[in-house]
Image (cartoon, rainbow, N blue to C red; front, side, top):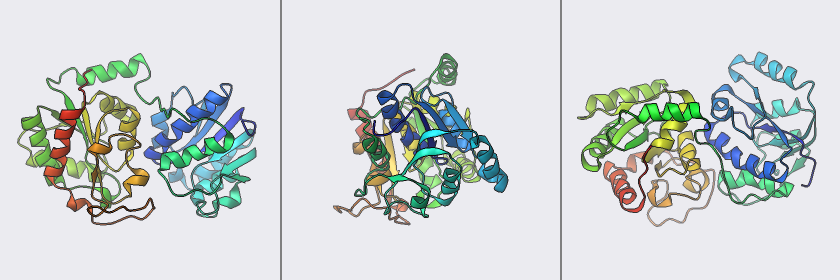
Length: 346
């Protein structure tokens, strides 16, 4: 490769979706240099998703909730380490500070146009400028600069061991019909759909499509309130698995589902990485940049663009678009799935 890569440090500390997008980068780099040792600086939440992955040799936790103590703890862990290469994939100021703690020969970051929050001051080398593209392809540009082939794009995110597979089998053992996992809320209110509409979809999935709806995600206040409304309004109560098994449990549930219906959030990208059919509800964020990567486009509901609009790939967000998505829009995509996709059972 273009530079030494025996010891590599990844700076991508937050966001489950972005954590998923880093995995194909690691796949490409470790194929090019199987002896590579990878240290990844991560916040505790997304660290749960990739802890134990065969490509990740070490995780250094950064707990941003501890304020200055969190930064000092990371600096102390990095003090005695020396790296050949840092991949500075995250462009916000907290990540810049952490990058400054790392002793590395090469610190590779984004070009000036994309290096927000003065990120370019904290790197030694930068990938070439490039037109905006999907976030996954944007991260793979780092592999292009290094000379590491990226095809095929793979993640290896599914259940990894017998313990996880046993947990998955036990979770699904009592269901008498195929499951549809519903990612019903996110931390960004503008990305959310209406709980009342989720409730109608749940009833139709059960009665008209013979599917068992399962509510998945965490147990934030927004998710718990959405769960409450859905439970109150549905005729046939869905199974709630909010917070069940943490992020690795969520992987097992999504992997075992016949279908997933997801908002624009991390579990959407987990589902794509697992190659499970997913109906994505996109309205606030540009789906060409953060939608399902190269898969399941026929199942995507695009409320971001106007009818027939050829919008460019940008970081522009469009508020108040999710209300455009109707229950019929979702159920029409379920019919597309039923017609076009093979079924899966555990």
